[in-house]
Image (cartoon, one colour):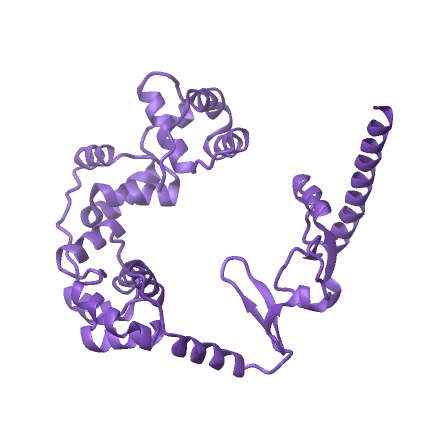
Length: 335
């Protein structure tokens, strides 16, 4: 992750706006103004630094007195989560910025003692292999034991006790020998059977790509063939995770749904959903728009989830484009 240094201009923006607007709105405006992507937590932390440097003062309601809600979280969680865990919880639940030292001092003041983390080792041993990610295991542990162990503490315990999800040299050698003939899905099963370790398919793909090892053509053909043969022509599927889009099975394989139904072979046009939903398979929801109009739509933020609004916006773009073309012709005639 790249850490971007705060500029003097951003600091001045915080100094002038934070006391008046508060954290959330100030950070949103700062990101829009400077085309950055600062998080709320980063903004709160920077404000605390500027305050300690004497460059800004907070209104009384924003001063760093401990609230009853903060004290309650500290009392309930400090004995098992420690200062780091409480610091994380305070931000997660209340958006409060408290350093580990501040949490430690407050706990000492209230007479609350940290009890060395006690983890149910038998539970971890029995359940570790049922989860691909440490975070999922941690969430289930807290749910099962009705307690709030900080993730950083839980992960530290797993590392200290040898429950690490790293690929050993022996595992990598095993994969390197068989991956080309198996593919990732079978490799996952074989790793679990031989080493007792559950690895995600994505992590296996990644490790093999690092070693420049791919699956054989025979395995690839089988995987593609199984996928193709299991769906009849005309079938529609939704692909993607974050950005979903529809595809349709044709005699030539899977094709983008919109491009297929609109018979769009012109690269100057883009198939666009009127409701801005790429997974909507209603043919009436799709239209072809010239790329240059799409640029105008995006630049002026005219996209809408309401089809009627989008239709109106497209007509507006046509008008804007026509006016610009006329303006260019007038300029050419005058020169």
